[in-house]
Length: 343
Image (tube, rainbow, N blue to C red; front, side, top):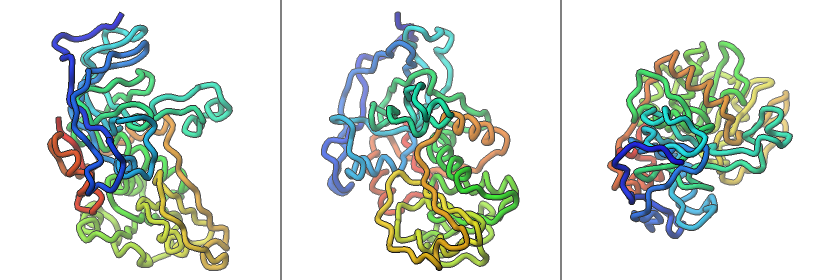
């Protein structure tokens, strides 16, 4: 039996991807839908805010093929539990939780068994395989919802749930040594959080990004330098993370690495990488590593770190009704920090 709080409406507003295409063609459509009923093991969450992620843009524009008709994007949801499905304690009603990208895994495959559930072939994702947070209500398996750290507003918490977690995973994949020199290519929602985590652990951070406002933000947060997207940093790098979905930056990032440096590519989508020169880009044991989603443990560890080190979360708020405008601004690099839909 579903346990719920009173006054849950029968319908809700939700944005759906109607016909994927460039954001200027308005691929999102605002519709009225029934409020979901939580399945066994699920929570129903009344959304307070939902972060706007570049993955949502890729979905809307068709870089990622939608896994279903008229899917609701959004996977950085902060809200309150208003109902629970069978098998979930009724005491969860009223809890503040976060809904993130990873929605479910099989739990039994070789990847799951070795703690790499992000590589599960049967994994499912919020806002891609199942309806997400560009809606007034969203359902999520309780085992994949996150407890949230204190000391942050809902709008500040939302970007932590994807931008923050993926940036944290990318830092792990980059294998930055203690006190090392980190290069960050692109400086949006994820990058500005990963930079702070790295600096809190003693790293020197150099930022390469095309947007002047992003360079100003990087310096304000404590980066040692900020320059153009393909400019060389002022010193060799021990590690680098490419957040911009621009494959043409891979050669520049590799060339900036010191011996044995690692470049981690954080995005789910990347434009084509130009031909690499072995001597200039890869010799001296430099390497490239991709980042594929995250494990729940990555998420838990990052949120603990965010509770321990108060991060400065830069957000640009948008009314829920302006989700399409938020995506257009994201595509045009007009968003400072992270865009957040406020319900």
